[in-house]
Length: 226
Image (cartoon, rainbow, N blue to C red; front, side, top):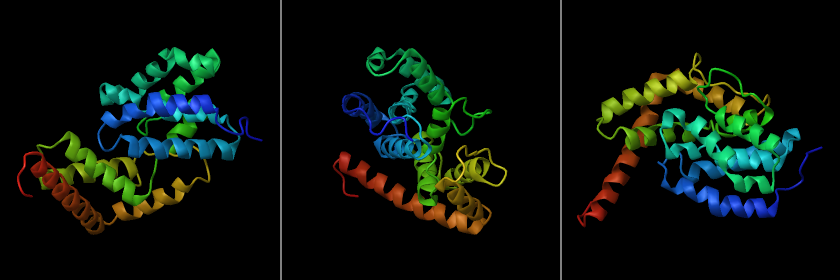
């Protein structure tokens, strides 16, 4: 049976008003459109396997707050932010906060070790929306957000290397909860990545649409026609 039937309403109000809005400042790959589904998937996974919903909810909600600092250590920064937030002591024991801190620290797909506790596995799994549309779009958005100096061909090279290294048959992506939807999605990704022409066509469609949209938004800002 699940440890918690529903999320504490006071806790939910705190997270939704004080924590989640901080994501609105982040890039398109880590903003509210990313964090909300991650939280939802984490709670669903916790319900499915009988974990504490409140702990899964909070660990997922804090997991990318470290993006307020350097991305390379955002998982460690996020863990520190959670552990230092004294407001959480209203709902959790020190031992529970320590477990959630570890969960945030261990959520990265590139981590060299498996998550140290169940909540780390939940957050790591929830953080991986491996549907093809999401993965490929997010990779394109990240390139445009963080490497705007690259031309289209250079963006393709960055995109192709990233998705192959992370999601390809020899990639570092690992799944921690057997039977999740992500197992099926990861196989689909690997099939696409193994077909260079198909992968390039997908990149072209996403890139062209996003690039045109960004140019139109820039033109509006300076009062020029798109």
